[in-house]
Length: 431
Image (cartoon, rainbow, N blue to C red):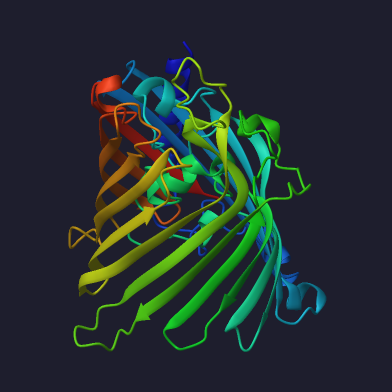
């Protein structure tokens, strides 16, 4: 009954959007949101220097073959944001602030783990149901906007490792990569978790941007057994004494180059100061699989990773364009479950001349288990995704998604999980 109720909720959302879209077909809200000025609330807030945002995303995913067990899952995400202009609100020149809160609803269990049996989360809104504070920060800019410092509760996945052309794809690994998601405590400061921290952005040249940040080593504390439940409402502000340092150098390819097509190229690294368990050896140097092992994993001080990524437009005609993206990341295998992950894909904005706002995207991702972590001597999980996003109205989008996971869990010969095929339908409304 629950499965049918969730499916019905998604259908109601789609039908409601269609009805409202038809009713207002000739009078779209000027700010491209469903509720327009919210009865005058938005203009009043804007006069006070505040911008209110509200968005509802609903997704139904069905595993049609392979994996651990067939089934469906409904996931919903309501996101409330409040952005403030410090100058207009309080006369704070160059200042701004931001708050975001999440209501995650739907299935309590993980569809990726329980149905697919996979490592890489199949939906970028999949998470434990909760109502929680996400980000809360203040920012000061100077040098005519060429530098700014942000301090507060931050999610690193909002600025680091991001790809413009991967943003239409649903798999979470096209955002915050598989390697930090699996290797860092609680997955690092990424949706739906954030950490206390600070981020500095500097533009030393016309084409260069440097991002550097330091975050609390775990967004939930030292016990990461069930991270989403430890700090269920995102109200933890006590530091752990560990730190995650991350830096990224970005290069913007000039649009006045020979082909006139923009591109962004990034290199980065992160370092974690905590201690990490060896996946193979105990504290005495014996194999953890040895019956004589003491069962206490060998501890390694610190962890680190290097990554590189690129976004490049290949073709443009008016509002239509084709862009490609690629990203690769590596980390030491003696203290990480995953020692390499990569993503690549292509996005076609406006695949049809009469549908310039549609997006067709294809992507592939891989997470490789380190030899130390995999009893069979290594293994990998690979997924392929195809998605089509169709804006019904500027404030309402429907998206169909197809994913195929090869070797779910990546455990090779030790545990054969059938390749998984799943279909998803997502609707998103901006109020």
